[in-house]
Structures are given as structure tokens and as C-alpha cells.
Length: 214
Image 1: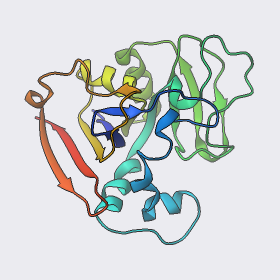
Image 2: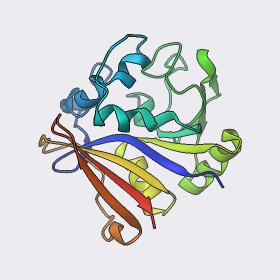
Image 3: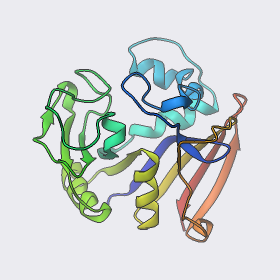
Image 4: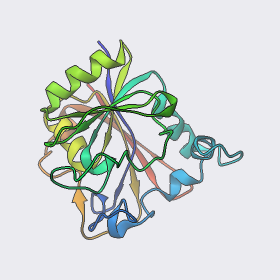
């Protein structure tokens, strides 16, 4: 059976995966870009933007694994956009423009479903009102035997961890303190009993933490 993976998911020292106050011009709220600056410097990120160059060290080694053998993604509605409640219209198609970086089916978890949206480059967004297990069944069918990535935000990753549905997770601990926002680890006591946990320090100051199912 295909594996369920998390990649390049950044958290602050105090465990926040996003800041407070998400809005259209601030996808991560008051955190701004601080959780992801390590990623922006990598060759992987620059290639995603169609640009040359970028770092090729340990940060890029971890970053580049995010799309290997991935056939579908699951994300929460807050990763898709800042809207809440019923959709005022269907004009919003995500933060990423006409050609999102996923290039696979993407299941967006929401209590307010809407028709699928087909984008350039092979990305199609499906809007599901579903439990983690139900969403994973849908995503695995769409992935056609390849792995499923859980893309975030923090509550979505946390729900899949709590449901014991994740096989591998790459978490990046960034040396900042946010103080407020949405935490990743709440309610996940004893997680180390289910996963083999390894860490790797980077010259950029972040710590790469990998959790692999025992």
C-alpha cells in the first residue's frame, strides 16, 4: 500500500506551524516568511520558481524529497486560501496562480464543498467534507499506487498524526519563537512510541526532524 508522508513542514521553537492572523496578503499570519526562509534558499525552491542556483547542502537534500513518488496531496482549507465559511464565489483557486507546484490531484478538506478545479500542469483540486481516513481513501485512489503527501496546515497534519495515518514525517524546527498561531504537537503525547525519530542540524540554523513509523 502507498505510504502517507509529510515533507518540509516548518515549526517554530514553541511549536507553531503558522502565525496568527492569516489573510490574503499574509498566508502565514504574523509569522510572515520566517518559518520558510531556510527553504527559499535551496536549489529545490528556486527550480520550482523556474530560477537557477540555490543552495545544495543539507537543506536542499531534505527539501528535494518532497515530490518523489507522490501521486496526490491532502491539505486543509487554510492552506488553500484565507476564506472561511461558505464560499462567496468560486473565483479563488489557491495561492499559487494558474500552474500550482503540485502537479497531482489535491484533496482540500472543507465543510463547504464546491466543484473540482482543474489547473494547468496537472493539478486538480477536489473539495471534500471528510474525515482523515475518508480523505485518505479518496487520495489513494487518485494517487494510482503512488504515495500521498499531507501538505498542511498544522491542524491537518496533527489530525492525521492523531489518527495514526502517517508513515513518514519531515518536520523542520526553525529557531524563532512565534508565541501565537496554530500549534502542531498539541494532543500528541507519546508520539515517540510510534515513530523512530532522527535529527540533523543544518548550518542555516534549522533542525531537520524525521519521524519514521516503527
